[in-house]
Amino acid sequence: MSRATPLRLPRATRALLRRLRQRASGKAAAPAQPPRTWLFDLDDTLHNASAHIFPHINRAMTAYIRELLSLDEAGAGKLRQHYWRRYGATLQGLVRHHGVEPQHFLARTHDFPDLAGMVVAEPGLRAMLHRLPGRKIVFSNAPRAYAEAVLRIIGVRDCFDALYTIESLRYRPKPARAAFRRLLHAEKLDPRRCIMVEDSPANLLTAKRLGMKTVLVSACLRRAPHVDVLVASAMDLPLRSGRL
Image (cartoon, rainbow, N blue to C red; front, top):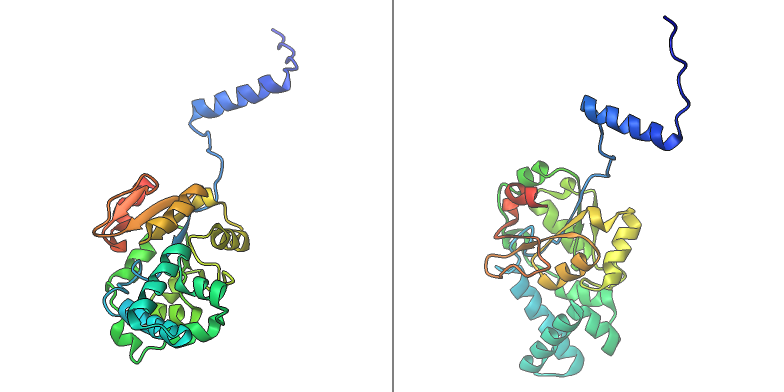
């Protein structure tokens, strides 16, 4: 009995048959996707800055503004908070409206007598970070020297592939879109493959609008619509990462 001559099938039919045979054999492969990238805020996300560090910085910033603009302490404190709420960082308001030199301001307000004694962090932080698959980047409005020092003190600097600070962002802090876009462009990241971990709902709102998954680290705030996951501590991330 002679064999039938194979027919020349149209390209679309051949592609359909290939997919059907792959499905039948259980070998159909999903298209490869780049690994997720975790973008971590630093203060009050990776360590508890509110315990000792933020009060020190706030006093130093208030003193700086008081001296710069000849205000009393109450007035200087109100202006500091106003610029922080409006721009995401007090520095941005002082640069825009008073011509302050950023490096001078940062050096004066991030001078700590005993930074190591002021840092409060979870002892299992390093192990937790190693349990999260994907690249990890620190994305902070803090100055580089301070951020590097804190990461070394808590023993996790080598857990991160990159560090973006206020200098890297050309003094355009979160929640400005320009800050996010600078990091995404420099690292060649698709925001849809990024997870932003933050204690600031305002910063997460920008991240969500860009297409990122969002994690709010807070023991007291409620989960807003633009927050995908709420955790009381970054230590809870491995348990909740399945929802991301």
